[in-house]
Image (tube, rainbow, N blue to C red; front, side, top):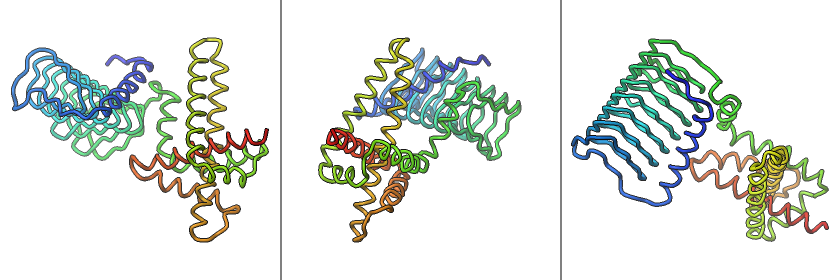
Length: 331
């Protein structure tokens, strides 16, 4: 099976994210190809919030959406990009599937090679050729069968499936990016703790007291939120403009490093303020305990699917805004 370039694989992941985000912007009825089990002849291109292939496509298929479901038959090749891609039918040619979650269901039969990537890839059906997977995690489910080789740049969870060829773990597709991607699952635990250590140290290095930053945060919460948002957008724009020129790449790296440090400091300030508020509810003085309480609260909130990430985001923006205001006040 021909190996695609790493840049192609990363680009495919970005396309999946962009397509999913774009489709989320406007809610639309499902796009159905071959509804009622009918046969559609010729190559098909389908897009929408939800794309469902219910009948037979005699030719190739390209599908883009938040959710893409192939439960009918495609005699040619399939390219599917979306938030969730579920293959539950028959594909006669090769399959390329990228998304946040890719599933080859128990009743799926893929006659050609499979190239899949995303946060999670589950192989529960039959693939009569080679399989190549990159991303965070690949699950070889019980009953799943790969007649060729399984090459993966991901964490493998073997639940009892069968690989007739060889299992070939690799890091040549994503390299360091793959390691970083797999470490993101620890972000809800690592980031708040790292912010509490690095961020508070940075605040002390800048000569800022935790108490004064907390007062500014509590006093003007909305102003802090808007100021933090402007600061983040400014850093991103500056980094992108610098990266656009070859000469500016080293400077862009410095700006990004500075941005990450400021983000940790902002999150630390936000966590301290949150911890102080929570302790005030039970009539306790924040003191040295507030950073730990705030970090624990952010960590717990982050575990909630979808909406949980809003808590650290708001804490970061408001904390960063309070830091900017405190810096201005010291002048």
